[in-house]
Length: 323
Image (cartoon, rainbow, N blue to C red; front, side, top):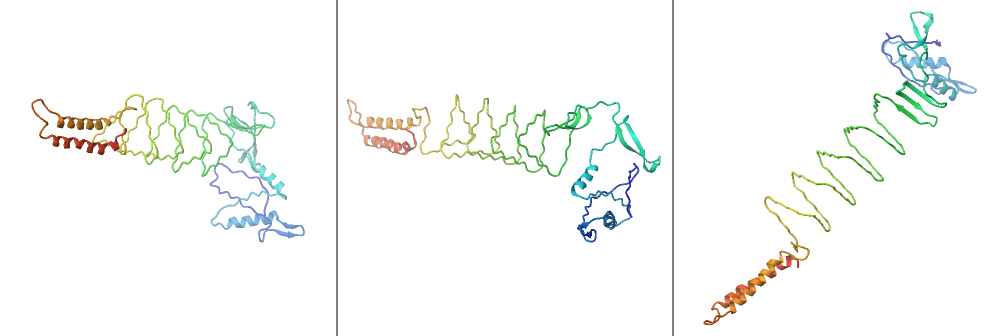
């Protein structure tokens, strides 16, 4: 048979295994059919739970605490009776003591009395859970949650989901460790403002952007242990305020169909073509020159042939020299 009783567990009790098992009138062999429908009697519910728990094996005492209700609303009201905030009263708290079965060796605390303590600041419609002034959790009249503590808040969960329209954080310092993958998706604009930024990557570092603008107020230094390759689909323009110095340990190559080295109006490579023209002109003058006591040089033809080589060299190099 079943009976209703008030129980209390002493400090010396062993390990307890608690299970929540729902029972409803539609379980086979549990509910009783009546003219008004299926009916679940407390006797049938207790017997069903006792048989189900007793079949788990092993020798153990089973205590069933049943929460029941005739309607859904009354059942939820019964569940509310088993909910609340529980804690050990601190030393010096005035409490009301009762005894199980009237036995003086089985006392339990019936309630605590807030004697000698001040009431917290709370407005009508608010809810407050407070340990002391610096440690509290409050629900305001508007429905806001306000938590504060001068110690540490620790959270542990298998998964966590946070949804909010806006979020504002103010921290002194922050350290985050991500053991797997970290992915951030920003549909708008992401802005980072910092006094200094240090990024260290042991693997690959990849960036894919539509347009990129970098503005550096001070110096820029790049140290690459391996090779560097830059590929530009169109123009690559560099504007340097003072001096550009390029030093290669083995070889430096400038390869292009047309080369311009110099100022905006003068191409230094054009000097080679101008020199070839001067060499050709000197060869012509040398081949045709005469003296007062002699005629033309006997090797004038050879001199002209040598001067003609300047035309060949000019035709070879002029296509790659910008003019």
